[in-house]
Length: 104
Image (cartoon, rainbow, N blue to C red; front, side, top):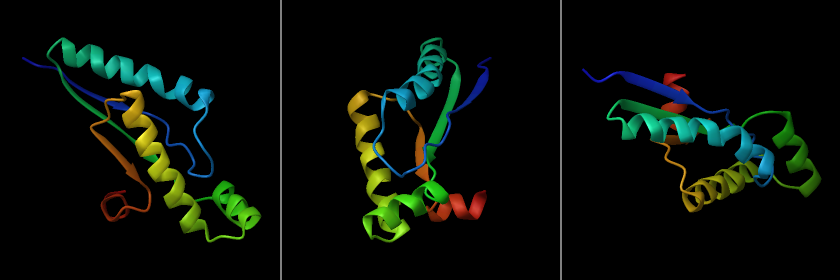
């Protein structure tokens, strides 16, 4: 019988580009998710961008933009970066997504 595993990574604030520290914190869960999938286990690996909070408001103020604009820009950048790096998320969402707001 397959075992079920849930892996969750920290949700980086969408207030600036990803850096090596983000990747170092997120990569271990990706490695574990891949390992257990290779063993034939049932894995759900989730994370997303935190699109709310003071760090985003501060960045938006510095740039003369709305917080939602800043968060959307960096969330899309994160999605692209993770795809290019080959991360194996089953679900990578944003805290502004309707499904996240309904379920969390």
